Length: 260
Image: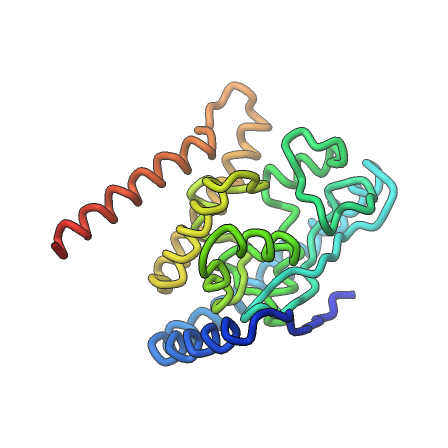
């Protein structure tokens, strides 16, 4: 069912050569880290598939089928490593519609089912992407993969946006744990996410990956706990993202002052 499909995404030749050179430099500087990262991806993805998805996947599949007609999985072409296209797997969270590949989901989107809303808010809709990790199309931690239309649009807004493509896309990323999830509709939201993605690409290390995985798991469990215990209080992810962005700007200002 889960078949890897890799197809080159056509774009400017100069940008392609620039990205390849950046990639070679990245590999030379981080060879040991990338070996450890791939080993971690294989071990954790196998553990999740065998220990969690083996029983949770059938349960979610039944609930999806009950909530609406259609397939259990949503398969979409996404932009991946070095701009290549791959089949990205998710649990289906919307009713079947023709705009799924070109139109982002928005807040209170009528296409999202009741079960789909729960899956999206809890991040459980991303669980099938552990198969993508196992096949090598994705990694556990990295910039989130975009639809082709979004990647083209964002690249026209933000200079060197495709710099984030020199690493594999991830199930979760630094931007996501900082509160930037869901649709990016404004320049500010697009640019802030790119800043976090670019920061990750330049500074990624194994311990950062572990912290991102831990925070993602914490956010998922916090949402589920809040759902089970209505009186509990969990801080708004958007507010978390705004605080983190202010800390990033302060850190950048301090670094610039130290250089000057």
